[in-house]
Image 1 (cartoon, helix red, strand yellow):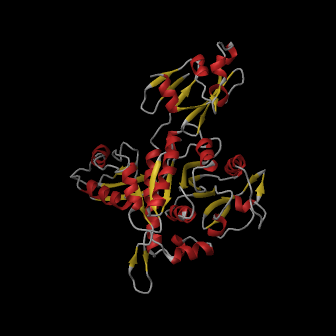
Image 2 (spheres, chains in turn green, blue):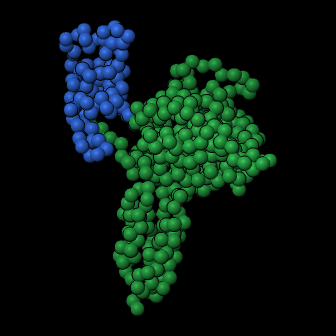
Image 3 (tube, one colour):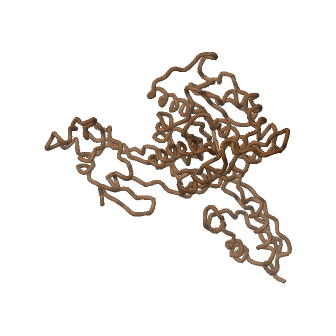
Length: 359
Length: 84
């Protein structure tokens, strides 16, 4: 039997559709370095748009099966890789964050919903998947990222730029790193905006697949500045399940809609608590509020995170739970949500912002 | 100025049209105080010529005119409404 042509293999592979991007994987340019030996051995590279791809394993099996069915194929070798693509098909890099491909903001309508914990763990989960990740703490007045990442040190400076702090393989920068220890920040709104811009601009981020940005709660200066200074890939909104929290999360979402920032979806934190003594599942803040709100608003629901003592303990001790207790329900929830976020982010890589020309 | 929108459609604007649509507080007025554009009848040539356009996040354009006026942030929805 004769070996199939490259064309035949590509035709077969083009039957595989990316569920998030809604197109086939061949026209998306995901199949690379395709080789067919005279003996019918087929090998190629399957390049995903994110290492945290939620359908990674399914793609691999689908590719092996589809190609394996072609007459004349004696073996299939699929090499899975990932290359995060920059948002919005930009032709030139952003001036503020030139080496950063995707910027993901984590926001909430109100404080106390665990937004920083979610931001730190999502960043850590993306890093664990193999992506290069930065974490910017944009909460100027109440920075908590230095503590949660165990990086309470001052950043080094070189050539007038700040070197981000390496914490658990992520590049971290927070106003808490820069201000003198033990001091409190008292700023008016415009200063908050200015400081966020400076932290983004002055930090030497290098090349990053994802920059996760932990915003302060609410719909104030920080969020507005961010929406004006950089083209954000998208925003994920964190809330707790009870009505009072989901109602306020809606405000945050509406604000970002005004700024034309894509909502990546809602995340429900402190969703349930499993009592370590009796094993009973308690839903302290009710349950499913964020999912219902997401449905109402027509945005994706990204997942729910349990209330676990370990998440809090590890955050206080400076190690995100996805690293310290990878087998816990909390860590698994964070990883699943990170995959969802990454998938939604990939969609933005194929969007083009309006093009302006003056003549 | 020409904008190619995400869906491929194009809109064209003149500097004059954009200058008179400036949404800034000085031009529009705020808190019940009428703005400059409701008081003046004519604007000089340098007021009407665009010198610089920059993207604000992904929701608006900041348009600068030769006169130096560059306060207005023209949201995409405002720009779309101008050509309807």
